[in-house]
Length: 453
Image (cartoon, rainbow, N blue to C red; front, side, top):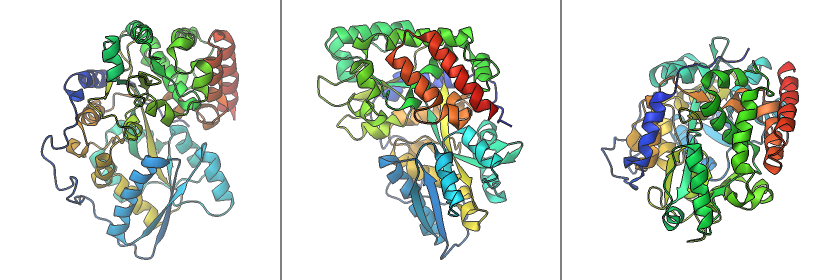
């Protein structure tokens, strides 16, 4: 059975995220506000007690690479220091359920896996891979997490996942030089967004960088438009396949998305170029190239900051952010996240879940940047700048009122597999945005097959 999402409105997030365009983008202020004993340079404070695990070896699998993997490794090093265990990071591939299936069939499952989809947690439970969360980790969850985040990691009332990492996936980051040179302003509606794109294009800079080589970014484009245009009730129905992808509401959202995808001059490299652009490059090309970047805007979550850090752009000065523009009455707020799930019923695996559910672990990665925690006990001062601080405060202020990434709620064969299902269908749509009806039919065929299996 699939986890039932809460259906409250995301008004609190919308209000708080709106502040990003005000004080939140004023620049980096690493010394803004008091730092606790977990601040940079002072070592992480201890708020959770962990067992001694001298000699125990623990493997953690995740699809993270580059700076994201490096920053998570810092967290694992601290766990090693506190427990005496030896922790090895195991690089996984998408879809991670297939990767884990191979490891388990070979008799060598990792102790813990970081699962990026709600559907992946449910599959791990259905296949009897996942182990329930222990008492110590559950106590940390009850203390530090809103019920909505706990529910996302539960299946049939049993807790299996600890949502360690969250994402606000309703943000558009922009190159301030490109905006200033074009005389462009931050748009608040989809109509204004398209007008802003045309203004930037007229200045000689391609307005939007799209990571079409990574199908998951295209699902995020669709989901934000769909949530704002169709509303949260329809969003929940489509996420659970209680309405079909041939529904008129899907046609409306795809038609709206085609207003961007159907104009190659607005997309860096056109459709063909976008389909060859992976997510990291979509970000770095937006904040490189001086007065002539390959894109003025790039859409994706708070984690974009990790990739911006690979350029010379300074967040809050050269790189700013605004909420995804409203298509309907309200701007959308879509969240995502990665949950730690134990695949071995061992003392080490449960201790690591307990640590990851604590503010101690979250603080380390928050300080490194490019990370957002759903842990409400984490001091916002841990984040390295006002932009990330405000995004984090908005997430916590939302409580249970959010919508989780739609594709991540679906069976992984449809919503989370490269070259298949929704990822492939939306790549085809980017290539030919006139074929709305054909893409709807393909989406429905693939979804029906995935939900029946």
